[in-house]
Image (cartoon, rainbow, N blue to C red):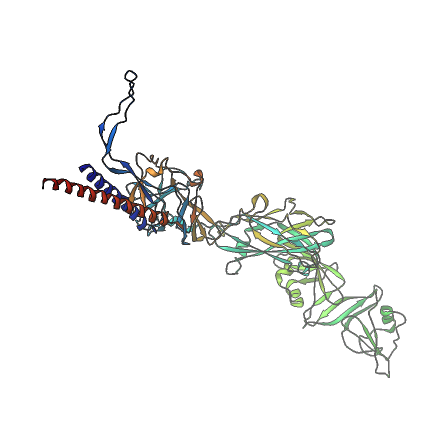
Length: 623
């Protein structure tokens, strides 16, 4: 009788324990990464009232089974459903991580490692990646300072906001590429200023500069051009100055054939001209002045005019003549008012002009650079006539440095000057194959490389690095008279992305990849690997012991943690950033279990009640 009481009590206790497990599951239905538990019962023990006997061949009696009375139930095991993946909850927080697979995050309280599936992390005040609930440090691997790659060693706290990570070191530009079309008919490339090519680059300190290059045509039909370094500007758009430019090299000094023409200033005109055809001359004729043939001093003779303008010229003594700045003759017959204009014929040239500022120009002749006195640059022609830079600059409104680079020029009868040769510094010849327009060479280099060099000298250029500029991908083609040459820092082909240079970068964001690698992005376009979140795997993850706060610790039945951990990808898993794993509690199952547990508890209570009634009847026998 007493046995049934104790069996009922044991049943009540075990069903109460099962209800405790169910209650805990339901309480944690919204706990991040909570793993539900289940309970199994075992028979408690048995009282044997009769032993089993075997069959006897001698007596012919069969065997009998043992008689055993059970004494109740006990808790056999409480299992954790740790392998079942919970649903995911999107948070969009970069350090909220969920694990797909059987691995665990590793966290440390300063003394020992724990394991968790709850990936709600944040960056604390010291820059450490830590659990939001406990502040325990998230463990992982850091980078090798030599290679920059992850070094899988004993796990350490991940410090993702260390001071050395907040900025990305600046780097000087070392490679650049010029691309696009060179069109020989482009008005810019044919002008004195050339087609502008701006190359932005950085020095070692991260300061930005712009190298102003210009492309010019020499002989477009022959595919001959040249590229010149005009200036280098700082990030404020100001030139770095002539002193520094003298230490910078690009190509070499070249003497270039040109056909750049310049007109006289509008406020300067010819006052006298000299006409000649080799046999006849009219010297220092006043422009626009009326001469009466045979009367006015300095008037030419009829024979002289007819020799200059043609024998059929209708002119006689008493007629009025005048000549304009272009050498054209106006004849007004005596007694009339209507002039007859005769244009300057071929074979007669204007050989000299006296300008309104007093300057004298020998026209129809070539002037050559005379370097006999570098302090006073002049140009002379075959007759020994001289023109200095100051005079030319005043006549044509040209900067003195443009004239200083000229090596020869001509002046025609109208006074227009055409520079036929000039000397350019920091220039490189750029050649294309005329028939195909394919690149041929620059500065003799068929690979297309030319160096923008920063040499040693009194000016400090130590923060700059030489830049190799490649022109090999440019072409000479028709582009509707519009060249498209442009320059960009960085290499191409096998060197793509190298040598671009950069300013110093500030960290803009930190991202976690699906393999747990943590990268920082910077505002100079760079990224850096900061570390990797390590994971732990166990032969029997259900053997881990719960420690509260969503934490587990290794036990003798789970397998030991080796202190190093593993890459989550090795086990076929991955991490997702901005997502948390939810509880894997199934409420429908829990409520069903609750019903069966309630009925079991109820039935066991009835055992006690009925047994008590039986005992009551037994005690009543004495009455």
